[in-house]
Image (cartoon, rainbow, N blue to C red; front, side):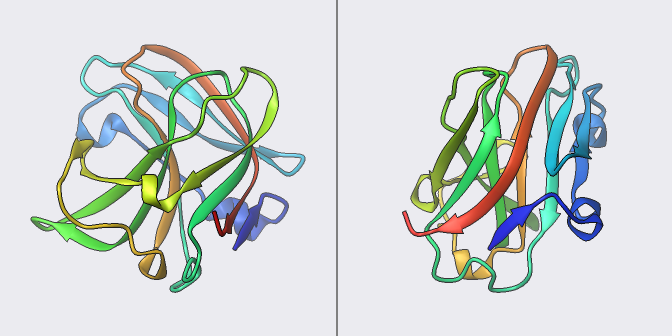
Length: 164
């Protein structure tokens, strides 16, 4: 799998999900220019405190893979990669998250997130339980929920699956 942001089909697939779904006041979402996705907005921890972007994946797209590599330009905040599969807990979809490795703010860098580092959670609360099964991946995303108020911006040139 390789996701780049050069086609309308790819860019239309990415949607924002912010804390407004639970009464929060954060804003954010994706914009696209020159083959880059910019995920930006403002986090407000009063009543919420997260912003995310997500896109669906074709069934089996990550089968046999063990990591996601990304080319990013960060503002230095604590972003996480999120993957979802067919795993549910008490009727809720389980999010498998791992932090994006810290990079120097404002500089392009390649980062790798190993699937073994993904931790299951529901609504941000950690779970003991299911492990991420790449063959059942159905959604990929990026979330910011670092507990800090204020503006944020993360640029992504591409994401691709790989062997770690």
